[in-house]
Length: 295
Image (spheres, rainbow, N blue to C red):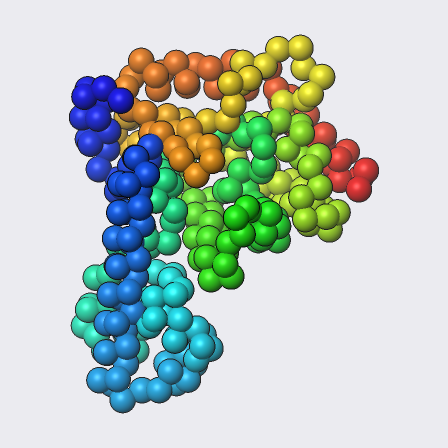
């Protein structure tokens, strides 16, 4: 990585960047674990100060006593709404809410934390996928099927953390003002039977619903297509509110977040070609309906 590239990435200011060396990634992981542990200790201290048992706090927050124990022991990360509610219930005066942004960032794998922050600032997302349904479009059952296939296997708490984080990202569909979201997926993505027929059926039905949203364009790249400008693999182009573009590429738990205009502009142009080669949004929804009927 050149010095110029490193300097440009530093300007992004969206958390730990992707593409770091193994040592740096391990250090960031450890730092994230430290944040979660410190939050958990604060939660426990404030609960004890309030003279409240875990069962009672759990009932007030909508969680079991064992879940509260997991939060306090740093084994599970609560969603932002639960942190705000805990702050209110324990009369913490903001001592818990102040952790919210750091805890939320820690719930994502280090290689994705920068991208997760960018999604919150995006006015446009262009996403091309070749292996699985995009995370923003996944049903919970589909998520769990994918996570269950990871090797080495993920422990249950990490799985729950990843599912919670991925579902939270889908708030982007309800954001105001609504960002423009364009998805192109290879036909093979939709034909994989990950999780079995019932999971795939639910996923395809979900795609049909999402595809009806006015700020969403959902397209399929058919396998019989003679040309495909996306043969180099999946990628995402993000446009931030200030107009700056970012190119995100992920593979095997590593990723890169490119900020050089020479790369981001070309990626955006390449995406435009891919979109022109794919089925139109209307044709794509009909194609998904056809696949659904074949299950």
